[in-house]
Image (cartoon, rainbow, N blue to C red; front, side, top):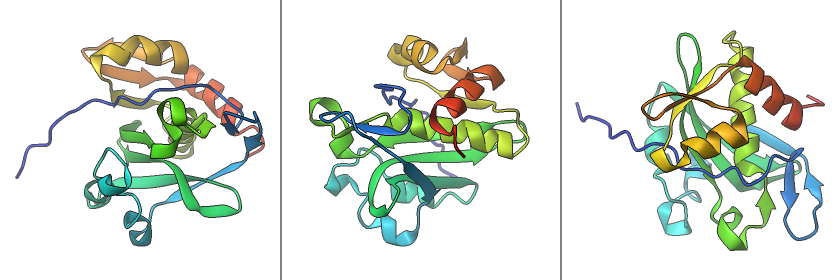
Length: 176
């Protein structure tokens, strides 16, 4: 069996918003999060500007890949997250904003925060008290502590505990 490389997450939490926010107009848009299907995989390729091989993530039976879309516009994927339900927490394998939501050309802010808040909410739904973990790139550890309230657990392991999860869920899912 091929050993998996542990790359560490390197998403940037640009802004914690109530949903996702158009960077030019400041307008907020309600979002939906749903499971990625085989049809979606055709558009979320490296050829289309995505950094990661999402088809590979999709093939892992123990993981679920979710897509973030704007309500009433399910065809345009704003971001993706790959999650695994562990015995006592949710583990985030990958988080990525759509190519048009990165860098100086980004259309929407808040995509990554929205996806992480979803992982926190899923953890509560599965009886894991909001606990979420992930492996961070070394240079982003402080960023995740500041932006998400994550705890640096040692090495590159990061944990979002119950308190931090509740704050993120309250920010993104007040009305859910």
